[in-house]
Image 1: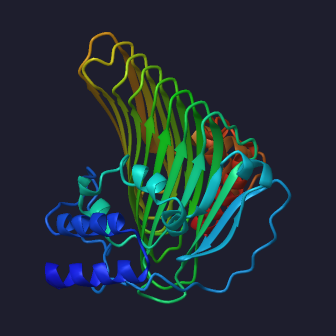
Image 2: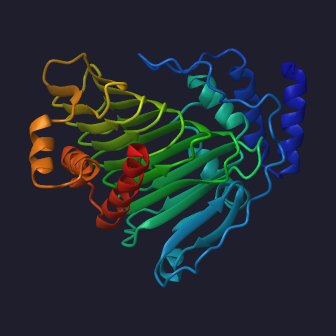
Length: 426
């Protein structure tokens, strides 16, 4: 399809969807950039031929599979989406009175357009690569969370997103925008799942704006289906004395490539990124986990651990970058990979890019098989081998699991972990 025709179709779809003209203009600019941009770089993983794009983009932006939804509990802050439809958005009255917003992204673009457009695609730029441009051009689902200045949301905000793959040609292009104003606090738990077995791509983006002295904890439990090819990009812009903690369980069953970024733009900011990934069968996964220090006296931590089963492939790239002028910055990272089969291939690549003298920086990386001493000890106690392997894996992942700040997230992640490991062993 030529660019002129594609633009006309996209402009018509945006108008039919009653979107602000400013968003339509951004969509069209992103579409033009998409035609010329390159795919993002993922060293040591060949993903360029993966089916990220539909030949004929779906521009209806409607429809959802059947879904049973339990009623929201008192005090619960929750948003539930299936495909492009929001089934539930619940914010207690006390938080509404303080100005907290949690709603479907397109509803927010209708009700508070200036607020959304002020931040949308400002942390992640649409023209960064071909996948970010495509994401904005064909964005079809999303959520908006806004926490005003000084407000502390004590209950976790639950965002449940189910990819509707009951039919083919239904890509999920989902955008979660979180804005935490100065001195605010919020704990967000995202859960990504797939309903149905049709092959559909997913483009998933999270933008976090953490203003001065705010605290944001973002946890995500990712378990998309085996037929889903996924691109994700999660980035936080961290202001002066603000802190963002990431805790991600990457349990997708399909091929996945993506990026996690903490941009420490204000003095004294902190970014703490924890990630667990499990790969099985012939799955391929590549992750760039980056912390960039712009401000002085900032702290950036990366701790990621992966377990490979079957004939799977996993690439961890941990990137700590200290920009010139970021005096007193501290960058530390660990990248560790455990291979449970000789047919697997894992890479743990620590990268430090330092353009300043008065800093602290360090890294650790390891790739290897399961510890035979630990495994033999468990086997000698009569524990079946599959159970013994899972116990060794649990021990290997404990450094990250125990560091996840929310007990409920830890318990859910362990349950998903056990399920995926059992399926992988089978």
